[in-house]
Image (cartoon, rainbow, N blue to C red; front, side, top):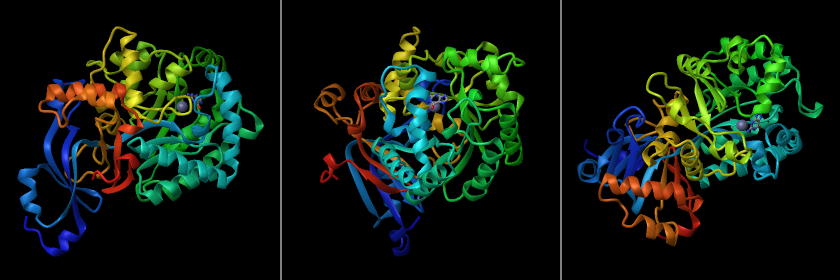
Length: 453
Ligand code: GUN
Ligand code: ZN
């Protein structure tokens, strides 16, 4: 293609070393799933990928456009965090409890504050900034029972043009009065929100019953009805996280054979259903999730912090009946917004089960794998042409120790790259994020690196 002055105005590009995935490393030879372009050019137009490949091949076709260069960095697709509670941002790192007491003592009182719209907006802003500081460009987000807490999150995400999936939390029992809603209100308010926000700009909606314990049969039935009325919205909830939670659920729903059946009964298990945790699932539950095409959000820092258990990643990603998996922070049960920290704890959880998690698999689970788990891999997750241009620039030399560990960047081979990525997921954090781009625009630049680019 010949460039002309009109095009030159709307087209920009980024030059550097690029890594993304074009397949699932759990299902093929890992190396075949990786695309590494050591000196690449990503051409951006209208917030999307216009061209991508070797600098030497692509650049001559786009002469005269403005190119931002990132030497000695690694550019990857933006991270996706597929389960996170924005109202819990401020109670991250709350001491000493396991799930049910932690909810009562810390979480519910904090979520009550989101009745106040100004307060909700203040935290939504901090939350979105924190995602960007950590290289995360899309998240599946829980709010609270208050419609205003949903509204401000969508407004702020829309203002930044970030692709978010969110929904109002439904709770009509087993929570303090100040944090319950009626089932019919939740239904009507969510319905209005779907009509206002689902597919508006980059926003998407998730029907979000908190978990089986805090919803009556009637409420779950209405959630199923709403899903049937709007089949392309998401369902987002928690499943099989903690032993006490599972026992209490069995008491509340005596007619169901297991936890998953509670959701199945109401039509809430399908290929746009995302279940956080899934730590204590039976083989039958894994198989039914697989058949339904449903997703488990693997939340390693939370599972360790709340002492909930060890996720069986190897079972979920088995060849015979695989379940879709994406990585998630689960802040505030989780202890970090960093998907690098999340990968690090994921690795340790596999190690405790005498399994493993390669760096390529870990980065896949936070990029293309996560996009696939949200049925968004046609839009996000790698640098394929036409995809939305959300990406993150990594500084693999963010600390002296990382410089020592990682050596020369960009890596000369896939072997070296794999080792560098492993060093980065174990040692990295928000300092590793040099810049975060959303729809082709730099929304975050690491202040300690300003002047370098
Ligand atoms: N189960 C129900 N609510 C929650 C929550 O807020 N955090 C976690 N980790 N699990 C839950
Ligand atoms: Zn959660």
